[in-house]
Amino acid sequence: MMVQGDNYVIAVSKLKYGDLPNHYFEEDNTAKLAYRKNLGEWFTAQYKLLKEGKPNELNLKPTPTNAPVTFIDAPRNN
Image 1 (cartoon, rainbow, N blue to C red):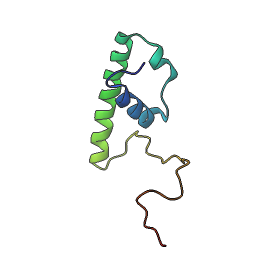
Image 2: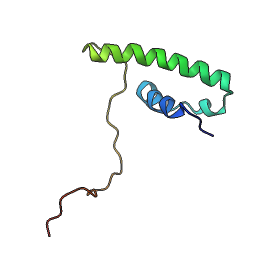
Image 3: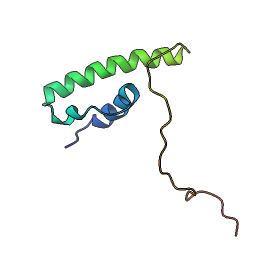
Image 4: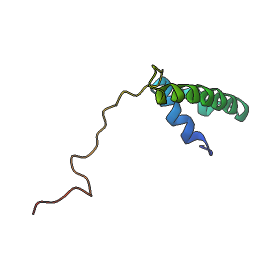
């Protein structure tokens, strides 16, 4: 079950590791909180480096998706 803040963990874990560690959802709340705190400290430092234009450890490589070729808001040429 996901709780408030898990979306943050998922997003930042993907920036750090490229994926979410499988063990996160199996941990108790104390371990989740410790993981979230460490992840937050890491992200704050890396984001500061990114804003300053310095090298950082953020995994900002785009990943291919199976997005549709057209989108709802795309203009139609009828």
